[in-house]
Length: 173
Image 1 (spheres, helix red, strand yellow):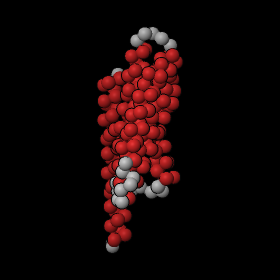
Image 2 (cartoon, one colour):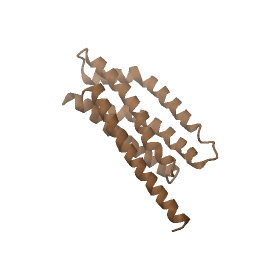
Image 3 (cartoon, rainbow, N blue to C red):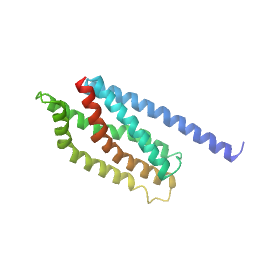
Image 4 (cartoon, rainbow, N blue to C red):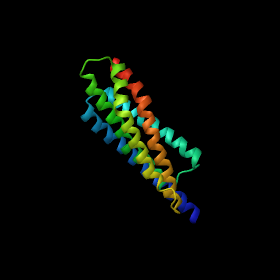
């Protein structure tokens, strides 16, 4: 009993809720991706990249902040919802280029060139929006801004590297 026990219970409850929300978001994103991309390889590529990006963002949070609080644990759902956008834009451009029957490596390179600059600008502006939370005096919101903003930049890097590699692997199989 007491304040420490209540705080511990509250954090555990929030962590379970965030975990359930993250899993639900991942499942719903997978369904939408399959309807949009109609390729199990592309869906798997995006899901693996989202999971890897979440792990990298959590690693960053551990190094930069050292802990998660009741608000900053929401970064996972935010990451899934916003991070998938970069992958979708890249993969749809890649699929559009694939219709010309060019080699996969060439279309991936061209898709990166066509979408890379726009996706980078989107990642930077989204990160700035999250970083704008940092000057607040409420520590949980400030930490959420730092974690989520950096997560968007990580998502961009994952899109331009890991997704490209995985898509080349799944497209040539």
